[in-house]
Length: 385
Image (cartoon, rainbow, N blue to C red):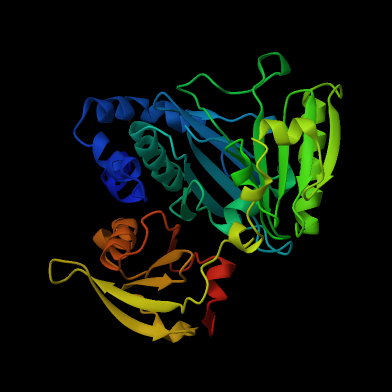
């Protein structure tokens, strides 16, 4: 399993930036690879008990090791790190069968080594769970809606600057530097991320929180949604708790005056974006027609054949082959039960090669599913399931 996982690294970590694209290759045939191999046994220990009951489990990659992430930090991510997230669930209360989603999340400033290790350890976890999980590759700023929704029970997803290498893991009021948090999403999925401390970061469609240690200011864009306001209130409550409820808080609407808020952001209200400029809350591509492709590398290079456009039927799928369902905002790579071992192993490679050949951004989320283990959102794409 470990050998196969290492071979899969080069396919799992490809994304839009050069660091992401190169990270997979950095491990292969290197001293780092040897170190990762040595950590494999310890990794199994770190995963002890994983997937035994319904819930969410999180690990961070720290110096080639998988380290359990504290429950109180669930939902908090650092852009210099890579994380592995396991969600264990049941399809309904009427069944005892456990189902699994494994997400590996790559921060925009994570090292190539850490990203490669995250991909490797994801496959190790997949093997430990009997290769039953659905695998999701998540790239910062381009996460799947399902991944973002995982954190709704933990105060939302929060992406902060720093990481394990920088030694920046938390902030206390004494060492505080002001930061601006952006709250964006809808009822199904909500995310909180750190953005540059300037007015150009603001838009009138979302909510922003200026966290200045013991002075917390919640700013509502003129067209901000009710769910964004609710989530912002939860975040502010959590921040107050961290400060032993000694922080002063206030809420600003639109262009309302507040000396500290506008001074820290630079004071130029004319640069605030409109709601439309802030982008859609669901993050999905507009005017994209979904397509289904059958993939083959029988000729020696990857070839794709369009099978359906717009609407799909289960009959379009063939157990002997590999298919890509291109939804624009993400790809599903479906591996038929009769596909060869080589085709099953190369599922993620097929998906990233498809993105390259079609000129699509390499940060596009990829979801790898196997026949018989399809999640409900995949089944909903096809009539006849």
